[in-house]
Amino acid sequence: MMLILTLGFLACLILKDMLCIFCFTLFFLVYLYYRFKDKRILALFILLSLFSCILVYPKEFKTYETYKVVEIKKGYCIGKNKGSKIFIQTDLDLSFQDEVKVKHIEPIHTDDNFTLFSFTKYNENKNIRFKTNSIEIIHKSTSLKSRLYNYLKSKPNSSIVLSLYYGIHDETIDEIYTMLGYGYMSAYYIVLHLLKRKYDETKIRRILLVFSILFGHFFVYTLSLSRFILYQLSTLFFTSKPNQIAFTILLFGILYPNQVLSISFVCPLLLQLVSYFCTEHKWIVQKLVLIGLMFIYFKKVNLISLLFFNILRKLYGLIFIFGFIVQDLINLKLPELTIHYAPRILFLILFIVFYIQCLKHFKWKYLLILFVPLLEIYCNPFFQVYTLNLGQADCSVIVEPFHKSVVMIDCGQNLYRDNVERIIMPFLENKNIHTIDTLILTHDDFDHNGGYDTLKDKIEIKQVIEDSNQIVNADYPFYLLLSEREAKDTNDSSIISYFTYDHLTYLFMGDASKQIERQLMSEYDLKADVIKVGHHGSNTSSDPDFLDSLDCKIALISCGYKNRYGHPSVETLKTLENLHINTLCTSDCGSIAIYSLHHLSFLVTNDGMFGIIWA
View 1: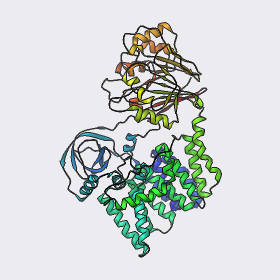
View 2: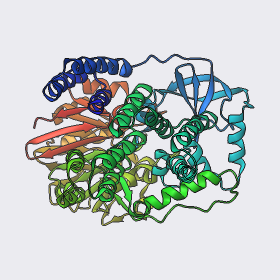
View 3: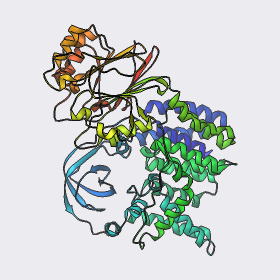
View 4: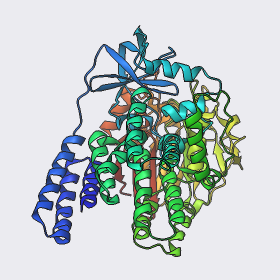
């Protein structure tokens, strides 16, 4: 009963929205009534539901002049003053409990894309919404915590130890071991197993619990360590495994209400439930759960790491124990045999159903879930048009149903980031795109074709188009317009793409100016449902008469957040508004996707917007 109540409480925390919590509470109360026939249980869950509303209610951010460093990651730190945290990005050598003065703050913003990790959302879940790169150290800490960190950091090849002790992820260790805290957990059970041979297990657990709390105090309370401490605490109060799990869920939800969907909590919880409720083939079920979670959270599975999961977990436990005295550690990063897959709704639904069924009774037919990725990838009937968010650069990916063909328009670069390495290739891998049938390079600007040299070395490209006279190899109407034109500069020579699928017509303008738009009007009688606005929304493009003649429904704009060019211009946005064209900008909503299947068409943005397109 206690476990069911806390799982309901957990569901309320996950839903967050007050209306959703209210609706769920009503349905769950009906379930509880028919299950237990006890009004006291109903009253208790109502209290838990109300408590969850208080926990998830957005907290106001208060700014302070000074912050203390409470968390250190690779490339950044987290500062804290009372209940407010701030993201600190600096080249200064900071340590734990250093006090810094903040000169300027601004909202955290990253170029978010489908299937890729969102650093902005990650920090929002930790109630960190503002950042600074302008600080002054006003006090260097001499605390034991700071000295321990500086000592370990100064050791040769310290990256594995820093990862296991502080959660500072490094490429020398698989990320899942860092996030799940398996270094400390494995070390704990190694010590417990050795000592309980000679001493009372209950006393040893109490001593190790105190040690765990002290370890968190002098090092860092990562999410995985906090959850582990709460679970060990629950074993002192409850003998029943379900009650231990329920107690852990309740306390973790109270302490970290916005982190209940983190893999540091979800993965151990699901594996614990398998360990207790699953009566047969536990090893297989646990591996399938791990595969599913790694697809959901990391969009990839390293099969070699998964195969040696139990061995590596114990090995990291030994390294954790001897980390203070070992001077040279080998690189334990295993060779990769990696499968990439970004799960969609079908996989998520089947994963939940599979998990619930396996807790009751495992059947070999449940292994069919492993084929769902292939089903979703190669049996996807939707025509897909993606506008990636590369900042002040351009890249669009057009995927024909069932992966019949892939067309990419531009692969732009930025001066501050390798877009191909950081965004384009991870996106293609997660979508299981291993071949680009046609790459259209609209014109010779770094923000449009700058990634070509890198991209061609990483993925097969069958056809490259750099001239409007070439023909796109596609089985649907795909035209390159205005092959003969009067172009005054490189921008005006941009290849203009015009294609149709499922009764929707798309027009991609590159960086073409108003002059080229007028030439298009005089040369063709164009209509377009979706336009990729020219020149990142600059006022050099988007002539009102031209846009009006197209009878557009949607305008897409690629531009960087707070870019130095001021794109998109106020004039262009005003024109689009006056013409009642729905405008989506990557700098505001992240990457944009349009899906169509016959007469059904809809769009989705990375920040959660959803809209039906009426053809």
